[in-house]
Length: 453
Image 1 (cartoon, rainbow, N blue to C red):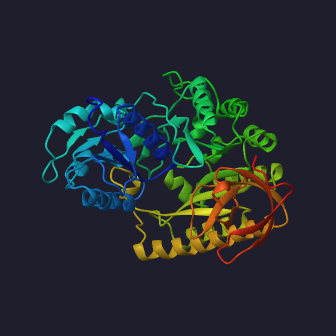
Image 2: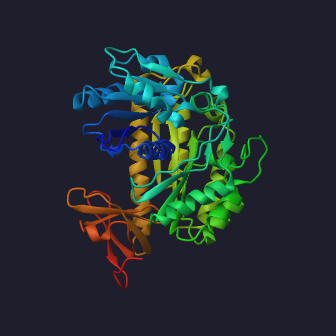
Image 3: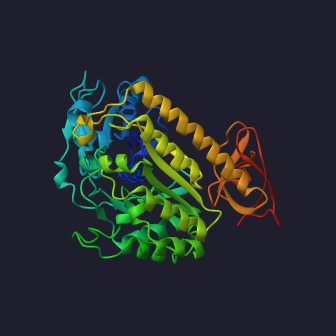
């Protein structure tokens, strides 16, 4: 990007949404660094601001404009680029936002540096007339591998993209295209590169990672299964921990559960979307299982790993959800040995079947139900933490000083804290969980030597 005597341009990134977005932001950032850019924090002055968008909820859409304003406030002359799911779904809408110069869709975002010379040669736009490069989503049929590194103690490793499911509330297939996978050799290569950076934990991520293997070499058949992926990753040297992110209950097989239970590096933590405990609602959502299968998955995990952490996604206020349906979900979750909930208040999304379904739930009711489930989540998390007291676990400490404390997570996702000590960052220690404090975090004692692993 110019002669060596020029001052290197600066780029900053902001990521909305899921772990998959974080992995892709990190990969895009490395492409800028290869072009001679220096990466800075988003609150610092930069020549280019890249915002990786999300469109899972209405709130994520609204946040975008505020983030653009934040960038403009720091440097009004900077160029602002929007990428990600919202950029694919509504490129013209984003291009009309005051301050946005370039919008890149699902496939174009990985070629972002190809557009830089043209962008930087143009004067900064006045008003919202940003350039748009967004393919038809049917053209998003090739795979681009990515992983996050340098941002966190753990790395997010993308293994799969897109989704062939047609849940009635979801825009992700419209934003990311068909299900397709990284090749197994490339996943293992990326995992080895992460391990070489002294990162202790890798989180597997994708849109529908249980579907891994479909489209691995550009065809629709499965070359490998998710189980085979897990087996192969467990053999990669230098990785202390591997964590499976969200996986559909119908794609989480007993063979995977049993393997994780005796694995060298996979940790006993599963995040399994439920969305509703009512079979009537699951049918309206076009989910690919009923509630009895979900119970079976939870029971299988707890039988193999009694100390396992199980997180659950649930949607409240879906069209047609009566008070009886909601209470069915509440009681279903209350009776299950799960550890925490991620509660999503249903919001209408354009071009989805659910947006035109009858039985719209008033927003006030949606918020009330959401509050009830968040309360249940707090109760479930505390009960799970209390069940871990007296046990010995390994904790990986993270890199941020939060109000004088360093935090970390055990292998089964119990959050702990101790007074800030920078020497503990990115180190693993054996601890005994002793008590829960007023923040709901767990206090602990060190076991044996305090030397980091």
